[in-house]
Structure formats: structure tokens, C-alpha cells
Image 1 (cartoon, rainbow, N blue to C red):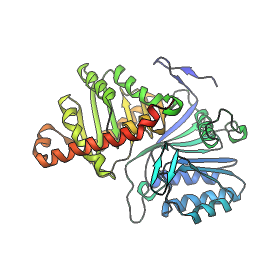
Image 2 (image 1 turned 90 degrees about the vertical axis):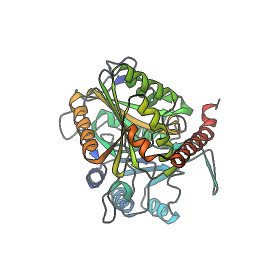
Image 3 (image 1 turned 90 degrees about the horizontal axis):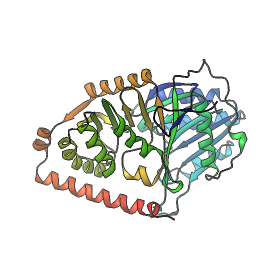
Image 4 (image 1 turned 60 degrees about the vertical axis):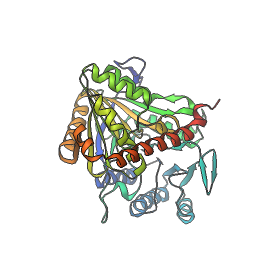
Length: 393
């Protein structure tokens, strides 16, 4: 199926796909387990975090059964975020016939990890069905007896784009060589229902080493060409100067720009650094909300009820310059409106609006200094972490 040109220049979309929006929690993992049970030929799982907890064991046991039944199962996890996996856990996978690999850094020791991180979260079955978003394999993203899932989203996909995701996984598995075993990505099976031309979908990647910066460009394009409104949900929101400049320009042009940030975060210094930026955002006329019900981990943006981007990419320089990221860029007004309605409900029921008055009331001199220090520290750490890649020949 040939790609079709987008209304936005220089980007090409695939058609004939079906899609469904999933939130983190039991529904997401029920779908993932169902896909494993129905797999016939191949499974690719590439994820930033895989944990040896209740959720991890649930998924791994299902993958073992698939491998025992003859399905080729490939698992790749990030060498930093999943470094605590015990050796016995990995030995069990390999004994079951599962191909397992860590994504390797440039340098690694018990005290040092230097290199890119495999940050995308992809699950592909039989080149035909896929899940893509920001959800890791961990109790944090599931509803268990003791935990409630962090807020995140993924897209379930049937159709030709699933084969393209299989190709992405296969190339990563083969160390990003231009050639990869073709049997890993066979022609898609017949999907469960007729596919639709209305879902125009494109894979976006960021990988600075391989000169891929699709997702960074798409955020700028969104801010440049939005007509009425943009809603951004970002778990670690520290946009660089270029993105901030385009946000301010969009507001001046009459675009309503809203940001949903985390109220509760698993990285406290990052949250303090974000709050140092709040004054600037409010001065520029950007609406700002903090999600309070749980930890926010989602990464997405919706534009004009026409199109959206969703995946693993955070609006910060680590995602832009030091991580391998993957998003889907989707044009479909009906689907986009449903996603925006979901965000409206989250704002109404689970968010606190941040105003200039609230900032003055809650930030004394000590708090402001702590936020400033956090911001400068995070900027310095990001600079050190990304310097190698930005200046790599």
C-alpha cells in the first residue's frame, strides 16, 4: 500500500489502519495478554522498563507459553532502566526459548552508564497488531491489588502500520543495520475487521545519532500551524528554548495553548525544575494544569481536533537528543475529538489549574530558590548527558 501525502508538507502517511485508544491499567494489560495468546508467528516487545514484579511476571509467563507453542519471541529492554532485572529472570526467559537482549550503552559499569537509552514502548504481533505509547511493563502502569496505574496512554493498531513497527523493532534488534532478517516481518495477516482509509498514520522517530528528529519537528510544526487550540500532556515537561519560543508565538497568534503537567512525579528534582518554568508559561498566556490523582506519565499533544501525536517522547532535551523515541502521528478528526474529550475530562475531574495568584501564594523565597536550583541542576545534567550526541561526528 503506497503512502499518501499529508496536508502538511514533507510528511507521508499510511492508510488502511484501525486504531483504539487505551489507558494504562487493567484494560491495557488485558489487551496485551490477549494479543500474546492469539499470536501465531512472531512477537516483538521493546520497552524501557521491564520489572520482575506481579505485572512483569504476568506478561512473561504469557510470553513463555507463546514461545513453547512455537511463536518466535523477541524482547529488548533498556540497559539502564531495566538493569535491576535479576540474572535468574533472564535465564528463565532464555530457557523458554525467548530471545532476550539489553540495549547496550556506550560505556557501562556498576557506577556509570553513558549512552543513548531505548525509551520507546512497542509491542507487535505477527506484523499485524501493535501497541504503542508510553506504558512500561511494571506494576506502576497496571491496576494491581496494591497499586493504581499511573496515568498513561497507548494506541492499539491493526493494519499496515503494524508491519512498519515490526520493521522498526527488527532493525533495533539487529543493531540498526540497514538489512535485517525479512522473516521477522512477514506480510500482515487479515485483521479482525475491515480497515479504514480515514486513519492516516505516520511513525515518528527521534534518534540523534542517526539524525532522526521527526518528533521534535512535529511539535514545532504543530505550534507553527495550529489554527485554534493545542493541548499538550507531558510527564517531564522541560521544553527547550525553541519550543518555548514557538509556544509563545502561537499564543500571540490567537491559538489557545494548554499544558497538562504532573502534579505528582516519580522524579522530584525534575518536578521542581518544571515549576520554575511555570511563571514564564503563565506570563506568556499559556494555560497550565497539574494532574493530581496519581503520577502522570503520558506524552501526547492534540491539535485543532484534526491530528495528534502520542508515544514515548517527553518535551525535554533528553528525549530530543539522547534517547531513542517513537511516536505515532495520526490524522483523524473523529479519533482526535475523542482523545481531546478524554483530556477535557481529566482536566475537569483530576487537575488543578495553576494561576499567577496560586504561584505567588505557594512559592516563598526558599521554595523559589529550590526550584531555580533544581532547574539549573537539571539543565546541567541534561547538557552533560546530551553533549556527546550533539557533537558526535
